[in-house]
Each structure stands twice: as C-alpha cells, then as structure tokens.
Length: 223
Image (cartoon, rainbow, N blue to C red; front, side, top):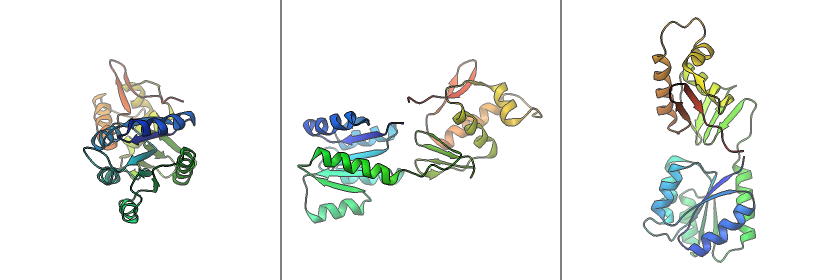
C-alpha cells in the first residue's frame, strides 16, 4: 500500500518542489498552506509522515508539531530556513524526527523520507491486519489506532476482525449474529447495532459504514 505524506508549507514554490518528486516516487501527497489548515488536514486524514515548515502563518510549525504529538507518533520532518542550533534543538525537544534546512536538495529529502519510513515501519507479525491507522493483532488480541492501544470487548474485537478480514463485503445483521455471536444467540438485531455503535466510538475512525437496509461493511482501501 502506498504511503501517504502530508506537506505543511506556506510557500507555493516549495510545496511544488516537494510534492512533484514525492508523487513521482510513488507517495500519495496532500498539502496544506498554513498551520491551522495543516492540523485540520492531519486530523481529517490518515498519513504515514509529515513534512512541516516552521515559519507558518496562523500557527507556527512548533505548535503544529506539538499538537500532532498529542495524538500520534507519526514521523515528522521539519524543513525551515532557520539553521540556528537553538531552532533545531527546539524541534527535537518537541519530538520531531528529522530536520532539514533550506535551501535543500530534493534528492536528500527523498532519501530522508525513505529512511525514516523504513526505520519507523512496524514489524509485520503473523496475524496482523491493517486498515489505515488501525492495526489488529489477531494472535495477541490487541487493537491499536495510530499506535495507541484501544480496549475492546470480545464481541467488538470479533466484529472488527471479521470486517478487516473481508474489506468491502457487506454483512447483514443476521450474518453478524451467526458469525460473531454464534447460532446459540437468543435476542434480536438491536444488539448488533449497539455493539457497532460502541465499536465506532472506541475506534474514532470512520471505517465501518452502514449500508442502508442491508447491514455493515468496512470500506476496501485503494491498492
């Protein structure tokens, strides 16, 4: 699956210099032009790495980095014209992963991105299923969202496992009762709706879709 990169940079020329070679290298790139838009874009999407300018309008890169770090351990590369040691130290104190000063070599940026993604990529264990920022460890019976473990009940875990194993497939409520609850279940379909609602609240990711009049599915991701 292609990696998704968010560029937060207010200079159109710099955005283009970064976006075009990264796209040509096979990354899916999204750009934002100020700090506030960058935070909103990050929260609305799912990304594998952020390239972040420090001198941004509305909210500077330090504040953006701090905000992102409150929710995620995603790799962050700071790019800026500030080459003073104090500026770099402040960036690393905010848990940025790398620092590149302007003017920069595009080739160097590509190599830094490649190395950082390789270094931070989680080891794929047997039984590990992924859907954007969701990772489900079937063997260890654990679920993580953006690196944070989410506690699920047995039924919630089994529901998510079933959806992740069959992305794009629509399951009726009867299907879910039979496959997750088992044939011995005594009750009605409202129980399914209740557990799906709780699962969505815990994940806080827009992944489980309601197919009106039929049932539920998890969307199939683009290859």
